[in-house]
Amino acid sequence: MNIQLSRIKELEEICKDIREEILRVVSKNGGHLSSTLGATELIVAMHEVFDSKKDPFIFDVSHQSYAHKLLTGRWKEFDTLREFGGLCGYTKPSESEHDYFVAGHSSTSISLGVGAAKAIALKGEQDSRVPVVMIGDGAMTAGMVYEALNELGDRKYPMVIILNDNEMSISKPIGAVSRILSSAMASPFYQNFKRHTENFVDNFGESARYIAKRMEESLKLITPGILFEEMGIDYIGPVDGHNLTSLIEILQKAKELKKPVIVHAQTIKGKGYEIAEGQEEKWHGVGPFDLDSGNAAKKSSAKSATQIYSEALLHLAKQNEKIVGATAAMPTGTGLDELMKVFPDRFWDVAIAEQHAVTSMAALAKEGFKPFCTIYSTFLQRGYDQVIHDTCLMNLPVVFALDRAGIVGEDGETHQGVFDISFLRAIPNMTLFAPRDEKSFHQAMAFASEYPYPCSLRYPRGAFTQTDLPDSLPFELSKSQLLRSESGDVLFIGYGNGVGRAYETSKYLDFGVSILDLRFVKPLDEEMLREMATKHKKWFVFSDSAKMGGVGSAILEFLAKEKILNVEVVSFEYEDRFITHGNTKQVEESLGLLPEQLAKKITESVK
Ligand SMILES: Cc1ncc(C[n+]2csc(CCOP(=O)(O)OP(=O)(O)O)c2C)c(N)n1
Ligand SMILES: CC(=O)[C@@H](O)[C@H](O)COP(=O)(O)O
Ligand SMILES: [Mg+2]
Image 1 (cartoon, protein in one colour):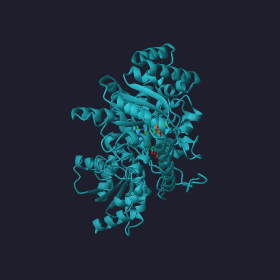
Image 2 (cartoon, protein in one colour):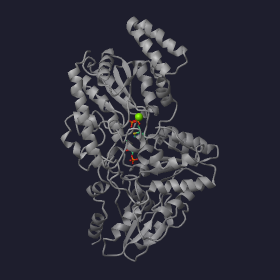
Image 3 (cartoon, helix red, strand yellow):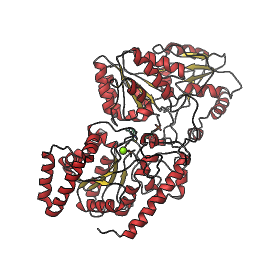
């Protein structure tokens, strides 16, 4: 394909406009800046060669897909990116027919590509449609990718996989795969070798390709080419992911091959915004900032729950050398980075590999260590079987520390931490508890560090809701804490950050309520609940979790078991639907969960 210079110039202008618009909107709304800036030329080239109306365009995680949104009729609405009621920060078919699939959790793209390719074959559409997948080097560290490549390399469905390699996950990518992707190909020797063999292959065809590959192998270079081609997938690259001419030519060639092909593109995360280039981690996901200086628009003064977790764990780890821990590619997000600095041999980033994080921590527990498996609530969904099969069935003392529990805000549906109580509560041997503030967090961590069975604690994104309720007492298995006792009929039961919401709600009422900090949702404090049932007949439950299977369910199950039928329970947990993105307060308002809204409902119901 001979692409006209004038067309390249046009496309370069489009890239410039796209970057300007992304910078304008992300500096105002926040978002995944550096990933998306770096993928601009790749996405423009994708749209030049393929047709997103018919070819499935599959973006892994899809945090890098802003240019795709702009190119597919959403320029005007882009101003509303990640705002409540506005465009989603990820691909979303309900937003546009050009968005093939919902994404947000990583490493699903090649499986989606394989499924789409099967459907295309079954429908006899192979002459007119081909899946195009974009996946980052970080996402290539997760197991699902290799499950998909395993089948793809064997069945050989036509598919173009663009490997967007910026040598970064959110943090530095971990492990052998990223080493293979970057170090071998970066060496001048390899580049030279590649150039020569490619000319040779171009001139002499398929048998030369075979010889070249064997030569590459005999040099004992484990290169990306070897890795993928041994799996049965053609490999082209590395190519400059910012050079539109070569990208378009190569994608066209890859499309024509009618085989599974990986196009390995090297890109710069943050490309086009000098302040972000080379500062990849800081600029991966950002809040609003000043474009000229790069300074954050506002800094929260309250200590985040993550920071408290990190400090508490560091304190415990200094006292107990058996304490170890893992994060699955979220060292800064979970605060485990601080532990990794002080104890590099005891705290690990295991890459985007939640399943592996859980099972490997279970083995450490079996060996007598005390693992803190630190994962966002939403991402533990990926490791569910490993929690059941490898941890709870063995009754091993792994602590699951679940960050970002509750509504996370602008990331929205794919990232809300709402299901953990429901899915963990059902597992035998699992104990569940939650802190409500800084002091109780330290106490909960002290309890966790001594507890000899599987357990999980959850805490919110950002800071806890502050209260002036009485101080927390040390954690004791199943024990709740009665924080306020009133003679009226109404009892508020709070769990975790729900205690703060209960407290805030009580401030809008013109009558007194008792407030119980439940602390343990499994096992429940049955003694306290029995006593409360004799005193209060209207119970309101506050917890940042799904209603179905959540805290209210646990309490209702208890009341049913005890045949206590004269207590009415109303749960202010999340209804049975996915929760959209936007500023947390606006999202909560849309769910009727702001304290003033709750107080109104309560007042009406106790009239
Ligand atoms: C299952 C899962 N775990 C963790 C994350 C958090 N996460 C989002 S993007 C990302 C890094 C992805 O790196 P890469 O694929 O190289 O994309 P880049 O941002 O570098 O373009 C991580 C760890 C996630 N989205 N899904
Ligand atoms: C794309 C992705 O999954 C992460 O970048 C996520 O957005 C991080 O969320 P926090 O900002 O809460 O760490
Ligand atoms: Mg990357």
